[in-house]
Image (tube, rainbow, N blue to C red; front, side, top):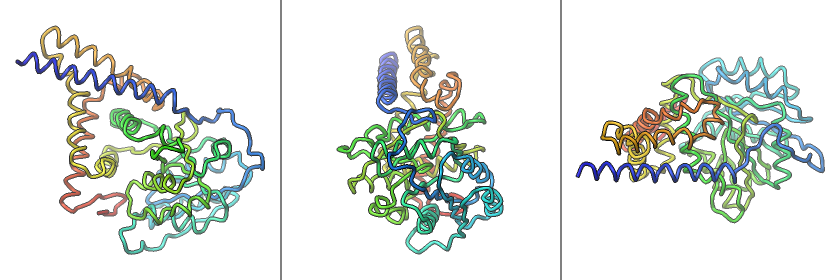
Length: 378
C-alpha cells in the first residue's frame, strides 16, 4: 500500500513538472522580451514629452539611484515628479539633492490620505498624475533603475504596438541567499498564474501590468479611472490592468533582460513582509487556493526529495525529478542571473512562501490586515 501511495505522489509530481515545463517554454516562445537592443522604429511624429511620476515612501535606500538613471536617459523631453507619501526617513532630502541634476524635476509633499481605505501608493500616484503636464505618463517605482535607452524603447514599442498602456516586468536583482532562494519561485508563480501572454491579446479578458513601470496615454488612463478607481487595492497594477481591458484599451506587456532592474528586498524581514502583503491577496482571499498552494508545494517541491529516502525505484524517480527542476526553470534563472543550482532550493522556498501566505490569510480573517511601509491596511 505504501509503495502505491509513493508511486501516485511521484506521478502527480511528474505531471506537475510537465505542466510547469510546458507553460514556461510556451511563454518563452510567445512572450518576447523588450530589451535595450530590441530593434524598433522611431515614432513617425517624433518623441512626445513624458511625465515620469514616482511614488515614494521611505525609499532612502533606492531613490537616488532611480533619479540618477533618469538623468542618463537618451530622451529629448520629460519631466520627473516625485510624489512623497509622507516618508518617515531621509527620502525627501535625498530626492531633492538627486533631482537637482535633472532638467525638469518637482517633489510633491503628499497630503493626508482621504477617507475610504486608500492605499498610500495609489494616493501618491493620483497626486503625481494631477501635477503632470504631458499627455504620456510613466508610473515608475522608486526602486527601479532604468537603462539609458529605456524611455525611447518604451515609447517606440508603445507607438509601434498602438498601445494605450505599456508595461515591463523588471529584471530582479538577487544578492542574499534568501533572495536567491525565494525569488525564482516568486517569478515562476508570477509566470504560471498571471495571464502574461493573454494580456497582449485584444480579444482576451486576460490583463496584466507591472506597477514598477507603466507607460500610459493620459486620455486612456483617465478614462479607465486611473489610480483613483483602484484606491484601496494593495495589488493596484492588476486592478488597473483590468480597468484598462474593460474599457477596451490596448495593453502591451513585456519582460526584459536589461531594460529596467530592481532589488525588491534586501533583508529576510522585508522579504517576509512583501510575501505576506502579496501572497494571499494574489490568491484573491480564497482558502481553496491556499490549500492548493500547499498541495502544489508538497507535490512539486518536497515529494521528489522525500522519494530519495525510499527504495531504488522511488529514489531513482525522485532523483530524475530533482534533475528536471533546474532545467524547467532555466529561463527564470537566466533572467534572474542566477546559476541553475538555485533551482534546487525550491523546498525551502515553497515552505517560506506557503507559511507567508498562511500568515497573510490568518491576519486577514483575524481583521488585522497587512502592514506595509509602516502602515496598516485592511
